[in-house]
Image (cartoon, rainbow, N blue to C red):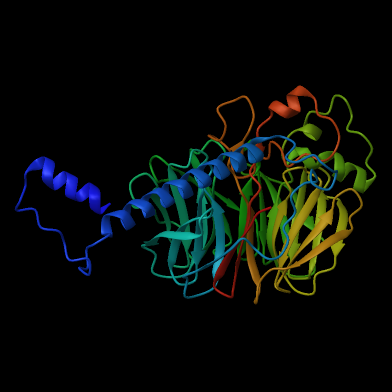
Length: 432
């Protein structure tokens, strides 16, 4: 090195060239920086190749098929992938964005927080309500978010414009406990402590219909995947199925012995398992309703049970007993084979739909589990993918063992991610 320096000095005839003091602070700095740049570059390349292989694994319809165990459907298991901490009061609801890796959480601290569920980072806090936020939902395209609150209002937020509040809907006379977009994204349905269900037009912000029938506080309302039916649950210990077009109560489901906390329509994919469980046999060939959304309903109650109902006859098909406290949330597995329930006993239970048995209990939180939801984004499939995945649309879960037809392989499926929220003020993200 020294000879090279001497030669350079001689060749260039540069007598003023002064060598740095070898003890100076900046000596060797460039070399250090250069080696660290190379090291970081290598790290980036490694991470990129790992990311590519993980994405390929996620998109593959069968996932790893080295054994039947590895191709079994994803079921949550401890520990959770992320525990999201920032809220200052109990979490009331969690909702996934239909296309982005975004999760919204509503809380009694009057705020909604937006998270990137993949990284576990909080992106922003959405403020506007003056009291506890009871529910949050994204429209099917993900352009708008809706929230409702004990401050009697429903608010619409523009997700593409920094979650600006674009509309505030007034009309309910008491706390608004639930709000959902219809599958076409053009209407909202809300449930309130004023005993009514209201339908709102998203573009105008006007209330276009009011459904009455419940004798007490209406806790929740959810539309079916085709938007033809609504299911509601109430403190009057009943659940009702409504015709969305006319506002008439089609069926009243009676049988629980306490307040109903949640009611959902199972996906069509779960019908085969439900029919097997209830001993109903195969659906009649000409019966269109038996294959369309809204044929069955699942309800969860403070009487610690979950009930599965025939939505046409109002008959209770099965009661799931096992939780030691109120049932707060029910989710059907995208494969249609399992029912997941979250409870104030701090656990998630997974029930096999074909035989009604609890096959797994996950200790989920340090306090009551108030909400649970499955990811909405669609992956795989020959189509354009995610856009338009409605809250209940469940094209596919992780398929079980066995060969698949081309149609099944091409069919997009719901992403494997589950989120839970709790009174312990945390949100947990569960992934394979």
